[in-house]
Image (cartoon, rainbow, N blue to C red; front, side):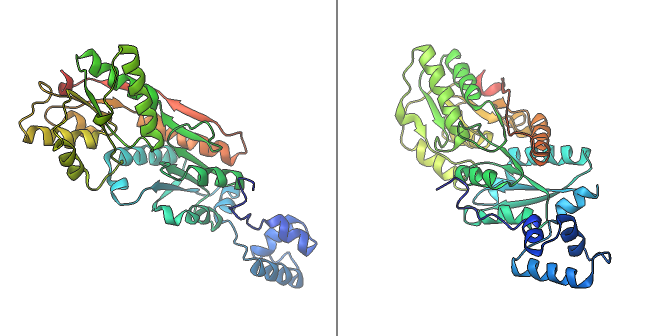
Length: 339
């Protein structure tokens, strides 16, 4: 079975033209109600379009007319938590700014895994001319199939080796390496890892965490790896349960700032001082990271660059250019949680 076989090929204007025995331009004019097309021909084309459930792509028509283009921004997630996450909001704002600069409008939507067919229908129905997708979750294979089907989109996530679609992401492996190296350099020997390694981005961050340990000659304790999803609605409960195991650790690398801040709060409530007893590094460098107490050391992702890169790759896809991946640099921002 080919990669695109599970995504049905939608009817194209050229298909209707072939069946009606006319040119594609004649079909286009007939569907737009042009009086230049004889009524009998126009009716025959409209009947064919109805029988094939053909939908005029309004977004593409507007693009040809150089009118305002609407781009869909799709956030993949299981709850509203995914949209309210500060990093997702920052990234969305960056994409919206980049679209505004080129005169495009934006439509924001969230899709649960059970609604993956909705992604294609957003474009085929003409609601939007293309998509910027934030996140991969378990959608990687479906995104590959959509790419093979001809859908025009770009993705924020991990640059996976077999990704057929254009993707923009931070250097997750290097980010994980910087976080763990920093904690090791501060004298930490038992560093906990907070993140779901089955998630593409968190998995790469864990690989960097392991590389830093290998270079330092330190063997990480597997018991200190706690699986926690991005946007986990039960985050505080997960943190409390983990702390109740009485594990010995002197550092924590959390794959999101939200998780890191929850950990610091829970540690303080138990009388464990950060950074004296435990040092903590987060990820994303959201605005809140500099305002919590103690202020949070974090791995910064360049969201401003990310928004422009995602829009650029979408424009390239719409122009028929080959897909490519953009990996953006990450940097460690040191604050009080590791000093």
